[in-house]
Length: 318
Length: 310
Image 1 (cartoon, rainbow over the protein chains, first blue to last red):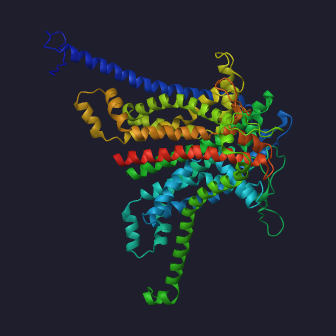
Image 2: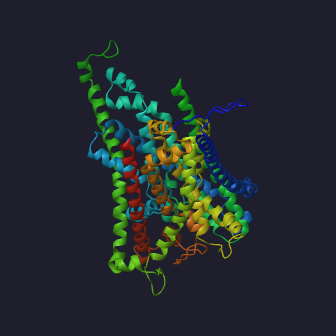
Image 3: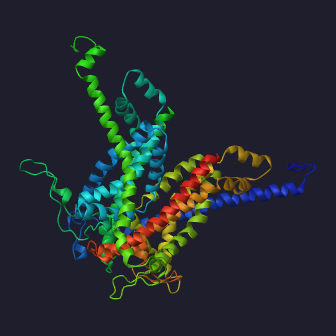
């Protein structure tokens, strides 16, 4: 088809294929329509979410004060606080991080650097991908059957930490593998050339070089774990706790105590769930305030992760 | 000996350096292998526990009664164990979520992969990731206390506890995931195919619809299937805003307990180990696991097939 789409302004028109010209303008218009459509959909969904979050913050922020942070839950909404919930969240996260990070990094390094490509590594790979898609409540059922009743560990901080560690393990494994894969071969080969053995190469070169990627994965995983409610409810965490776990440091010998691991507990999302489900509006305000604290924790963790990744990308570019 | 000069190989052998390094290396190798093998153990344990704890249930109730019964009243004096009400509510909310997530997700993915400039894309993708980090219990709060009262202004007969609003919220929740997986798929379509389209005189939107989407089709389908699997397994939004009352209905304005909401409800009531109530949560849990597993495996193979294609 002879296509001439130029139009000479003012001057006498050259031979113009009007059909092709129309097609081109209509295509342009459709393009604009498409791009605008994408942008509008994006803006609508973002605005909707920001409105919801803004609403939560407006309702909740006024309720957050010193008393709210250091009070136990109560039957009276104006006297209730989230002390046991945020302490519980911190303790559970401590256990989760101490378990999930070493095991996840270990598994990631094994799969990337040690495992021979074969049916076993293939099986583990499919398996990790599949575990990432298992609903979190199923992990709760696993923990209830295996940890709480099978191993008779009870409904404790330790069990909650173990459950969430299993839940975020795939995230840590996948990010470790990606970080390790991105390390240039020359670093490894140089270390081997100097006579380092395999573990020395891992410990001195691979893990330090992969640290930003590993850190990002661990932080994203933990921020996911902070907000997880379903598996913790399933293992039977209590919703009303008016005491703190025993402190980890004591005045008597041997000064360090691990009794808090075996203490009953509650966490922020469960406290929020409990208050949302009550009919009184004052408890809904408490729920909004808890939600603000929870969101502040997860979003700031994610912000840190994104910042680390941004810095990392910059350092590779140079 | 090693302090005066660089130790020789035989000296290192004699003072145990080599043996020590070898031992550390072996211990670490075992630790790393066990870490990797743990994931296999977890999968096995999930399957084992779900089957083991639900086996006594299926020994008493025929599987056909469980799958096709229309009444779920496990704690009544005359208990009925038909899972259809729970299953119907689960699939209905997941379907509502897909009605939101498919058109929105596809449009956003096309925009991000084909139209957006890199700077825009680099701002929007982290923002979407942040949205993925919003705890589900917070979405539950939105559904029950903000969106439902708002929607009741327009939709007559919308109950305070309903399936419609949690379904919509679920759709928004899985949107970031659906967008990022399908955008990855679209970007993996080789540029050569796009350029071929342009050479034939196609406009950008034609390339997007007739080259990129067909080219990335299995990857996009995988994104939707994996998103669906997430919607089916989602718990807190439904436990909070869709209610805990088993209700076989096709009217999304009514509330109905989903599989996950039922598990939460029973767990809150401190079920006794080994009781029939305890067995029922494992029976429905097994069903939920099988549904999401089939979605996940399909999604996994579609994605892998897609990666092999390019």
